[in-house]
Image (cartoon, rainbow, N blue to C red; front, side, top):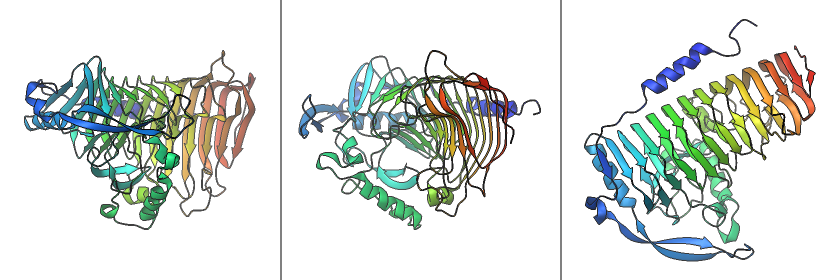
Length: 473
């Protein structure tokens, strides 16, 4: 191997340069949402929500509480800030109930110390209007994400406060399986997928609150540039937490995520370019970071890869997947750099995972991972498959190539207890190409290596269960 093959330093530095040069700067004007001039926009709203007994063994009961609703305050402050050339909309100490918040260019939404934004649990378009959004890799018009921006640039959410989606097993989440007599989202999900596969116009994919049971993402940007998300804490999300789509030059830094429900992916860049995710603490009920580029025909229609992404110095505290690529990857994924991450979830199935099939298609290439510590991996430490979900029943053969791993270590004090150290499988007609692993040590695995249809795989100084493992195919 020639020097540098395990890490493309020039490309890495170019990503850093693009993100940091385009980091948004804001006018020094500040607009406090509790300023007297916005008090006329505060409404008394009946929040409807469900609760059950402490034992949780009875049907939940619908209750109401009167809350001070700041939905129109946020809108007025953000609009004024935007119209006057930008600045900071400041959320001071206290609790603020609201519906969806829409960001505008040049605006930094800053959460001060001891501030909490709580999103109202009324699942209606009055609080979460119909907007152009993406749901599991499909473009549609559905409930607005809780924090949303479309066609904007130079935007931010920063500060030390908490953003609480108030989702739990009785609010928003019952739609996942149709619990407690609520409509099962699978009905609408299948309809949406059929619309996309049949080429149904996006403008006609309208899912109003009368029919929709598709839970909105927490924070989503669509076709935006120069984005900063820093310091905030996100809890209790109904769906994916941070979901930038078709966006560019994104810095996600020092964010804490703790939300452990169904489909609670932490950070999911989709169709995005030039992204840095660093110094975050991610504690989720699904994948911590999942890189995506559209599902099936919709991904091919948009045809934009997720590319040039740096993931570094993060702590993955819970989640089934640490860093995953897929499964919605029809537009492709390339140039992913991950370093100095700690995988510390007791429930972790896969620290590093690539998942696709011939229905998804897409090309996944140039994956660089180094200097990472892994505390748990139930299924495999390093896992890549072309047989995810539908398996090989499609016409769009995926491509996986150029995976470079170095200094990947399982922690000595933990029993990893994985089924496999390394699991790589592909189709005979499309083998995984160019896998290089060096200076790594994987201990506590039952089966060392499973490979099927691999072309050009090489180990250098790799130990599995304490023994040097040599492979050169």
